[in-house]
Image 1: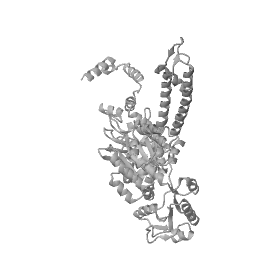
Image 2: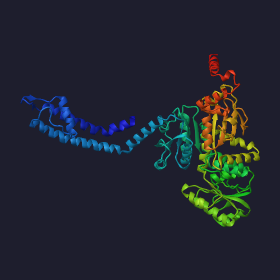
Image 3: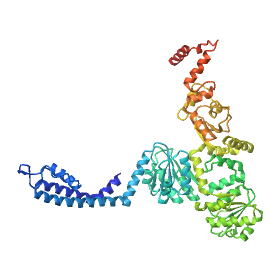
Image 4: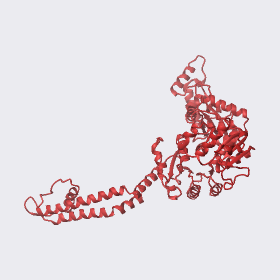
Length: 589
């Protein structure tokens, strides 16, 4: 607010001084010019009457001459005051309009409004620095999962895109340099509800500066800092400053690709459990594990070669500048867009080809040339510009490398689904048949729709109803947490149980629920809503534990009354008075 006031006073200083002087001289003159009262006696206006008259004179309202008709000298002075005050007002209003068009004043107003909006945040939020393709994809995923975000970007075009999409509310966004500490402070890095900072700029140096600033300015020890890095040097520097997570988009895709070759079932399961923008379950064609050709030995090509060689898969690299890119000695020199180059790379025995250059035209040319030579070849191409997505879809490739979406899905799993990440990391231990059965259960449970995953901890804060029932020594099993009243159908699938640092994959439905446990479930959106409602609704949980009783108190009383009215039912509990007295005595104890 101080910057807004400072700019306003600096730009409006002269107009305000002129306006004040005009009003002061006009008021003073009216008090000095003699007039007459209704009796013809000499009369001078008081300062109050003079200022009152000048006020409506200057605004051209014109209520009339007060308190008595003016004399000619007074009217001459009024004429002078009218023209000077109108000119002063025109000059002041013109200066004010010019001020409102001033870029510096606009930035100050926007900055202050942004800061106030962040201060009013009352829920946990994440700061996204850099709203490029990855930033937009991540922001949409976070908002879809009811996670608040604050955005900083130095490009107006990136923020203009926010106005074109309805995100269900206004997203606080600031056009500013994200590496400046003041801007990060305004974005709420020191806010008590700030969960973390995610820096997704395409420049590693900018992400490094954000990591440094976040490490120095944050007062919250639980603040998480996630940065994007495309070089090993930047990764090491970010980690040295205490960055919690450093992600390389090329390495992220390479790891997923390696998993798809090594264990395609687990790869498909990971896609189902992470939000990749799809609405229905699908299984991509599994990439074969034979000989692979990689065209383009840049950052993506190097990452893919490293992963494939770890899997002991034969790789042939094609690159036009093998020396400058430090390609292996076996590299075939060429762009890969020519048939001769691909034939030299032994395309006849290859199982698949990856077009990994930084040019979309070359990538499309490579895979189209390869498909002309080998129709059965597994084709993968890197998409660099989202504007070319239509062309890549029309090419009918087996896989398109959208590294930005892969990175956004990975960050979402870290931010909102840490137990999903832990489950997928441990799922390697499961037999293939178990994973196959799990995927079949998910498919039948969701009806072919994409599953929703959720987690909660058994505590009085997150699950008050469950904690209250456990305090009464009630026995609750996992089956009770995933079913609904009046049905025996399983509404969700338990994936992971965490207790005292120990994990259990695919826990049994008969496992007992205990305090301080953490659970990961997957199922439909309706199952998620029902499960979370169960955590807070004691009556609903009681109805599940005791299905012969109604969760509605009035109907429950009627049901119990019918039981008490049966002949021979003369137990003490059947008498409402005994129940009341027993309850009172227990409470007194």
